[in-house]
Image 1 (cartoon, rainbow, N blue to C red):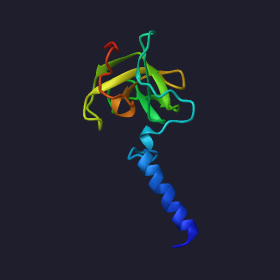
Image 2 (cartoon, rainbow, N blue to C red; image 1 turned 90 degrees about the horizontal axis):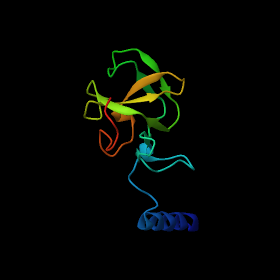
Image 3 (cartoon, rainbow, N blue to C red; image 1 turned 180 degrees about the horizontal axis):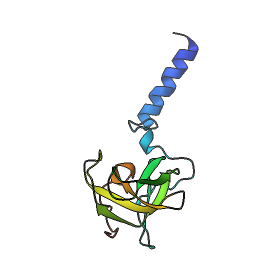
Image 4 (tube, rainbow, N blue to C red; image 1 turned 60 degrees about the vertical axis):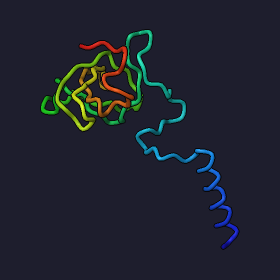
Length: 124
């Protein structure tokens, strides 16, 4: 085995042993400087990571008009409500001001909450 390959294997083994490499996929990766939290703050809003490019809809339904996107990957949400079921396995949608200034409903599958609805966030 070459020295380069030996060193690479040793570094990979050390990284795995110390937990530097995880099974988490890109959805849990955060840009440098982004808050790692997801919760309701004193302003009553849920501040949480979300899928960049997530769409906000006029109603809590994929068949309603798209109001705009969430281009950023960390956003705030004013409240939640029930709507169409989605790939997240529930019917929770979050209401927020989208990056284009419009207001819209985002399906919970696109918001990185540990549980839905997010504890402490009011229903709307």
